[in-house]
Every structure is written in C-alpha cells, then in structure tokens.
Image (cartoon, rainbow, N blue to C red; front, side, top):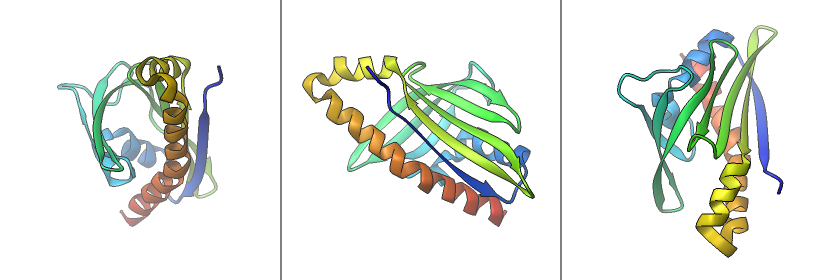
Length: 154
C-alpha cells in the first residue's frame, strides 16, 4: 500500500532562524493555513520534540480537531510534527538561498494513517485519502505564499 506525499518550496527574504521561529510557533498557524484555523500547545509545551498541541481545522462546512506531536525542532533547520502521533507527517525545512531562505513544506500520509482511514471509512477510505491528498496539494502553495507575505511584511 503506497502512501501519498507532497511538498512545495518558496524563497522568502528572511533568515532561516526568523522563519523557523514563525513556523514553529504553532499558535500562528491559523494566520497562513487554508484549513487549520487555530492551534494551541498543551499546558507548558513549546516547540521541542515530544511536545503535543491541538489544531482546529475547518473545511467545506466541517470542523474537527487533531492532536499532533513535535518530532523535529531544530532552530533554523527543520520543524516537523506527526498528526495523531503517527498518521500524517507535516514538516518545514529551512535552507539558505542567496539573501533569503528556501522554505519547503512537506506532507506525508503515513502507513498508520492509511490503515486508520481504512478502519474508519471502510469502502470510502480511498476517496477520503484522495480528498486529503488534494487538500495538501492545493493547500501547501497557499500556506507558503501566506508565510512569505507575513514574513516579508514584518
């Protein structure tokens, strides 16, 4: 069983450290994500491996919350988390690019997530997986453009 993945990149006129600081502050995610409208850390948590946060998502008249765990928190290099602790991996990588930074956002629907969708949705699982894949493919460029606008404005 294959697992879908997608990534996109953009160059932003800010340092890797500045962009890492923005993106790793999950409480700001609602400023740039077309689906995730808000995130909040568990009490006492912050951008470090093992920390958990909750995200509220809205799409097509549907609202839901997810729990995610930070798996990589390397200032100026990478910030990544696993939705559900094992289902989907979202990551942001930061690399120098001339006077700016190339930010690469990636999304991987992991085998545990695929299995969960088959258990939850039965015969409709593939349609649900396809819907999430399309949302990532259309959402990543929108998210990156919004991060760029926010970063270069301030």
